[in-house]
Amino acid sequence: MNNRETFEKGLALRREMNGPDLIDEMFRTADDFNLPMQELVTEHAWGAIWTRVDLDRRSRSILNLGMLAVLNRQDELAGHIRVALKNGLTKIEIRECFMQVAVYAGMPAGLSAFRVARQVFKEMDL
Image 1 (tube, rainbow, N blue to C red):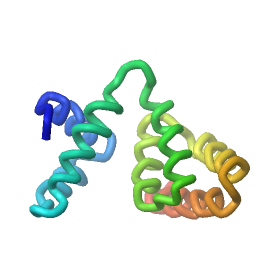
Image 2 (spheres, rainbow, N blue to C red):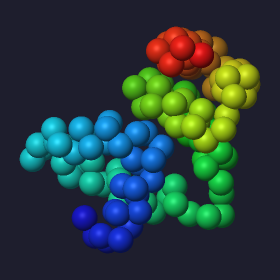
Image 3 (cartoon, one colour):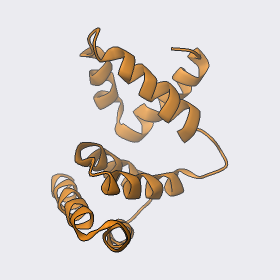
Image 4 (cartoon, rainbow, N blue to C red):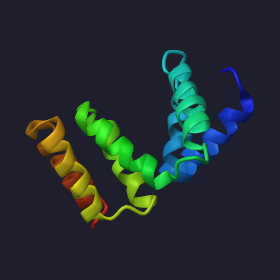
């Protein structure tokens, strides 16, 4: 870890967006192998990027939904769908993100994103 302040900002935001229980459990169960990755994600993705003020959280969520859907990162996509909802996106807006993914990145990517979203919505009783 390079910057403790950036890490702490990232940890606070990550806990806010994902829920403190989930993030605390990730760190509590981390071992020598995956702890460095949790620290990297927390400091750089959440602390150095998500806390920047020049792009709002809602916009960052839209970007992440598109990128994760295109890259077929279903586990991360599910988590970021939850974050997007917390950042104010509606189910309809999430649908539209994935419609755009389907047209620009391919139907399989769009269909997969829809499957993940439907499962998240079901789990959240939405």
